[in-house]
Length: 280
Image 1 (cartoon, rainbow, N blue to C red):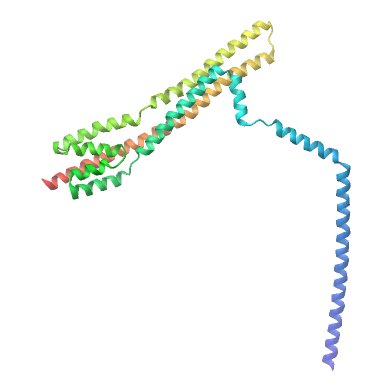
Image 2 (cartoon, rainbow, N blue to C red):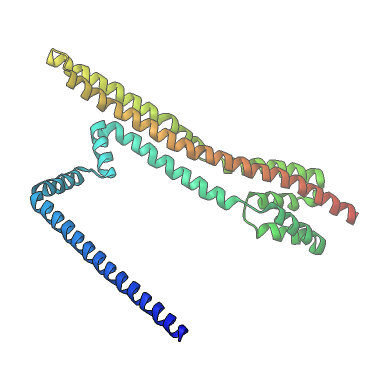
C-alpha cells in the first residue's frame, strides 16, 4: 500500500512537472514567434523606407563593373599611346626572342639522356656482342651523349688515344649545336631597351616641340608627352627581363648537358680501356 501511494505521488509530481515544462515551452515558442514577427516587420519597414538608396548602390556597382577595362584592352591602349612604330619593333623583338627560346628549350629537353643507363647498356653490349653491338645501342639512343659515344666507338680500332681525341672533338661540335641561336636571344635582350630608349628620346623631342609651338609650358602638355615617351622604355625593359629569364634557363640547361657529356665521356674511355685489356 505504501509503495502504491509512493508511486502515485511520484507520478503526480512528474505529471505536474512535465505539464509546467510544456506550458513554459509553449510560452517561449509564443514569445519567439512574436519576436520574429517584430523583426520581420522592422526589416520590411526598412526596405520600404530605403528603396532608393539600395537602387543607387546597385547602379554604382554596375557602373564600376562597366568601367573596369580588361587587361588586353589596357595593353592595346598603352601600345597605341607609345607609338606603333617603336612599340612595333619592341613587340617583334619579344616575339622572335620567345620563338627562339621555346625552340631551344624543346631541343634541349629532347637532348637530355640518362647517361648512367646508356653507359650500362654500352658496357653490356660490349661484353655480349663487341663494339658493333655497342654502336647499335648508341645509334638507337637519342641525344648528344649517344652521338659522342658512337664517334668514339667508331674509331676504336685506331686506339684509345684516337678515341679520346675523337670524343673531345665531337663534344665541341655537339656543344656548338646546343648553343645555336643563343646569340640572337642575347641580341634581342640588348636591343629591346635600346629601342625603348630611342622611342623615349624621340617622344621627348616631340613634347618639347609642342611646348615651343604653344609658346608656354603647359603642365598637362608636358606630363602627357613624358608619359607617352616613357611607355616605350618600360616596354623595352619588360621585354628584356622576360627574355633574360629564358636565356638564363637555357644556359643553365646547356651547362648541365655539357657536364653530363664530359663525365660520361671519361666513363666511356675507362670502359673501352678495360674492354681492350680483357681482349688483349
